[in-house]
Image (tube, rainbow, N blue to C red; front, side):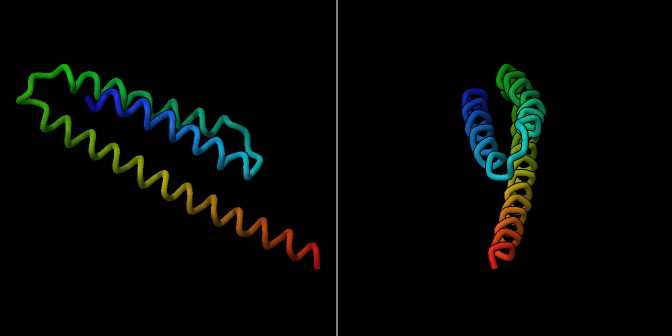
Length: 97
């Protein structure tokens, strides 16, 4: 169940990160690194899905902790990205004056 949702979320996150990285003109190595770091989570969820139901609560808690950590990192990334975009726009507007 959770296993099928994560690849979709991972694909969407990669797509969003690619779009944002284009704004800064960075290469996609950073996005690929993030994707590579998240792939073990898919394996973890596959393992949790195959576990005995009595052991799943711990796995679910761990998966939620991982998902929360991913969300925090993504939000921090987006804030830093927005800051860089604002600074770049400010720099460009100062150059036009």
